[in-house]
Length: 198
View 1 (cartoon, rainbow, N blue to C red):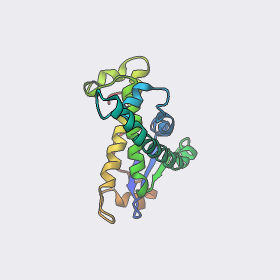
View 2: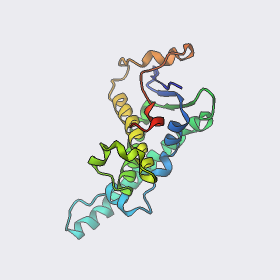
View 3: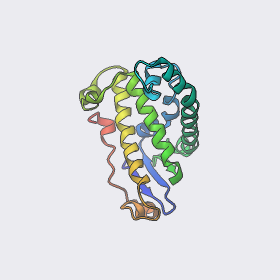
View 4: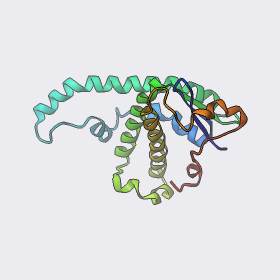
């Protein structure tokens, strides 16, 4: 199944013909954003401004944490709402479909960054690990977490690129949405999701 991605005239990013594994990763985003029981993830999401000033760090937490919690919660709510279509379509023979309105892109970027931070901290990944594709073939949870980091990183990069387009600007993908019924697709390869090559 070849995924189709297109930016519609109103700026909505449509992802169609999504394979089951890819749909499953996207549907996990809201639950993976939760760092309440993961101190190592909280320290990455909400780093202290200083290394040795406990008073300044406590004041920063008092002033900033409520706003940060609100931003993450708001992003999660938007993602949950947008995922309703994918939840309904993910088992269709034609694959799942997800529509992300243009004004939701930043929320999705934030949500995915939160998930990647939580996964990276929980499993102790660093920049060097991200280049080590052998982790994808390891037994246990680390390989699954690394797969999610790579897949969601690709989606995040796509959303960042789309969010930088000028309103009404041209995109190579614009026509694909209108031509979807004719079976045209975009050159966005998810084949490696299934073969573990990253």
